[in-house]
Length: 196
Image 1 (cartoon, rainbow, N blue to C red):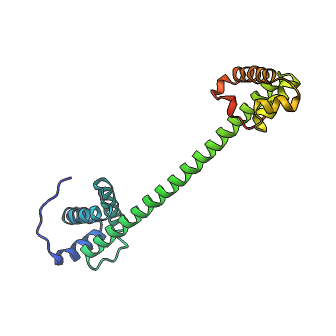
Image 2: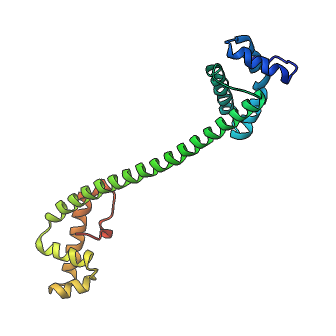
């Protein structure tokens, strides 16, 4: 962009605005070259981002050209500075809303994904666990239930079921190995599962 150094004269603004309303592209070019730097500085001060500021100022000048026949401008610098300030504030509002909505939706998507993934994982794990425990004998199932669901110790299990401590240990060990082998794809230790 080429910025022409021109001496600024308020009296010329009225004439330039008048010429602009009559589709004078040369008048538009002079307005652009004269006021673009101060508008850009204003936008930068508000949005604190040069690329965004440049886009905002370009949009303000495009609107100036597009609405040239209907605009009633008394003070051109005041009008342009106000338009840039308003456009910059609107940009910030949109950006802020966008960021808020984006973070909200991302959190919801993550929560949904986590919930869905956890639900699918839990259901698969539960099915595999039930399949693995269905292979156990009724006595082994009862021992595992007492051990893992009710928190019985090996001697308590032996006493409850009227079997030896060694028999209880054997059933627990054998059952855990069978279940662990069936659940290897989940990479979890069955010792910590609270369900049966």
